[in-house]
Image (cartoon, rainbow, N blue to C red; front, top):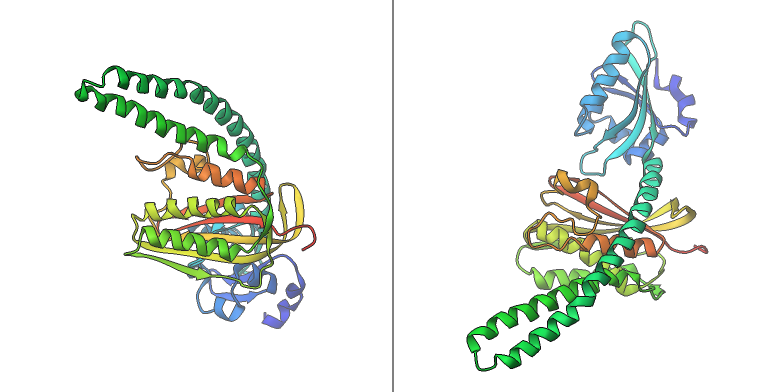
Length: 350
């Protein structure tokens, strides 16, 4: 069959492509080009299996369908395009000739469904976390003042014993450190103060802070869409969100690597159970070692950290501030590429 014979497939909203057993592409419809973000001319330069890092499941699906001359279904298949984010699709592979030589692949994106499910789970998780943190912080805060006061009184009593003052100094310093920790635990519960915010001013502020702290071998690349409208948001909280994510990334890279700050517009997205015509898509990408597998499911939980010196609060606070703005935060991580994506609504009138 010729490409002209597939012209009817070009009108489908469902991403569709036709391949040989070898993965050689015969046809790609516009919906599939949009899904993969690549034109059909570029797609045909490589086989389908060469196009993705993790193509084993895809190859197996095509071979099973052709070997058994029947449809083969994968309900959740992860595709990793070269240098891009993972795409989750429901896949149906159907032979279209006899004997089976060509296969029709239908890809149904399920990222939006996964995002909604994850958002619901994160909202419930955050509510439980918030209550836990508030109760824990208040329980810790109450005796801290007494501990510090008692240490100061003790210093007066042993003023003539300088060799003991070192110990009371440790008590005061550790109590002060715990006080700062408690203040950070309670900080998310204040209401944010909204004003018109240019997201690129926020990113430039964070970029300056990180480069000042790691001036030698850190590269921070800008990839901005300067046409974006302003956000109605709390500027200081947004700075904290980006700074917390950025610092985690830089510390994971041990101060040496590349960070990418990327802004784009997202259209027709559902955030906090509301549909928005336009939203900000902010991505913070690093080429570090990736998030350890054992903490990925709990990375937004309080006091979870992959570093011995970490407090495990940075991403918890970032998630809290993003949710207060009616947005979502998620991540995709593998060695050499970790991407945190923050979606924030511009507003009902955008």
